[in-house]
Length: 211
Ligand SMILES: Nc1nc2c(ncn2[C@@H]2O[C@H](COP(=O)(O)OP(=O)(O)OP(=O)(O)O)[C@@H](O)[C@H]2O)c(=O)[nH]1
Image (cartoon, rainbow, N blue to C red; front, side, top):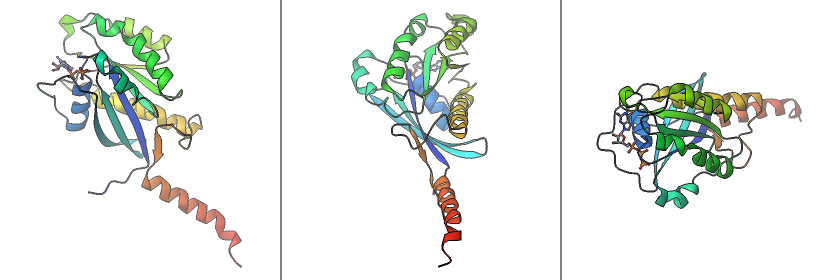
């Protein structure tokens, strides 16, 4: 099946080991919970075309390993990401406490314009919650992040997380705040956009070519 899309956005999924990054990606792409998820070795990849505000956007998603021993490998994937999901586990304060380190990495290694959404995963485990919604919302606000709680198990807010991040990037492109043609923007024009741009350029040239 041929794929046509207006834009391609490169996304990263980062956060501590066991927070549920691979399960989030799997639920987003396959619409089901990944049973027996193992620790990611290095980096895994997935992609999906979504509709955002009437535009089709291909999300190219890099799911990174949370374990410290892979940090030097995963860091090399940060460059040129347009968006990132910064994931912690609401039942693990340890994963929440590590957010500042992940954020520093993202802000220093990725594009300065990267759009980051904070994701509190395992929302289905309410009885084991160690991090309140309010506390995490404050952290998000202070650090200029969007925020959602999700469950990769039930699928709650999984698609919304990716769409929210993509929507924010698209709005920034449309307002001129983000330039897709800037090196390392993590954004590419798809065939559909390119064809439209070429058509516009041809139409602009038409008056000159009566010679
Ligand atoms: N109850 C519940 N369990 C989850 C959820 N998401 C992930 N898990 C479980 O959490 C564990 C870790 O999930 P992974 O997706 O492998 O975690 P990860 O963040 O990719 O871990 P690394 O690859 O080591 O960085 C697995 O046992 C999953 O079954 C969720 O939303 N709810």
